[in-house]
Image (cartoon, rainbow, N blue to C red):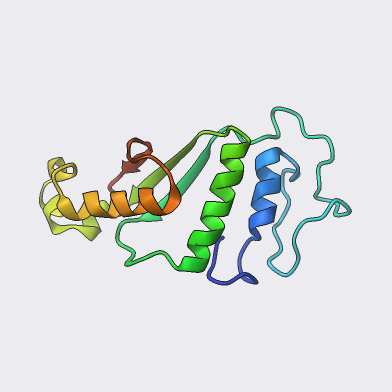
Length: 141
């Protein structure tokens, strides 16, 4: 939800970049049909330090087969803007127990799983987020 496949679906990457800088007012509803502009009511012309983003967190599922290239492109673009703005970034890889039976049997195997290590390395290479900034988590229900 949010960064759907294709350029014309989901939240616009430029809107998220504006949010990183604090230009999106609280309560603004993102519109997939049109990006936020300076003339919109939801545009914050003078963001304070409280309005700006202080950390960018990317949440991905380890259970997903592969990230679509168009979604990956949006994510990389947003991450690069965050880097330019000196915003720290982390990634949370969820559903690790569903992705790997070894981890499902015993959660202590999380750092022994070759499958999960490969998923994390591939994601790190694709996005440019260092491995030590990718945190695997089990979802509880």
